[in-house]
Image (cartoon, rainbow, N blue to C red; front, side):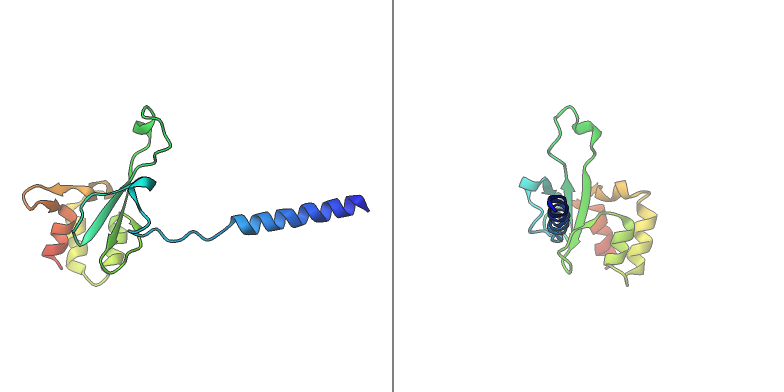
Length: 132
């Protein structure tokens, strides 16, 4: 009898633990992506805001091993998305000239954070301004 009770309690505990620990994460937004959480805004005031995320739990020696991750948000959508050409095209689905300019200008997603010193804005936002 004691074994049955113990097994029942154990099974109930596991059930409760798994359902409570699998809480839905709130979407990452410009409000929740703060510097204390490792996010830095690269280009404040532009149409597409780019965020740089650096995981702070690594020692300075290990920092080189962990590359920063980039996200973006737009004026129409505050939820952050991973910065990629595919996600930018989804954010501006009807702007086909912008899609073509992205493909022609940027060889890879790693280039999307480039800064245009002449226009004093990110190249990404300059393209959007030209094809918006």
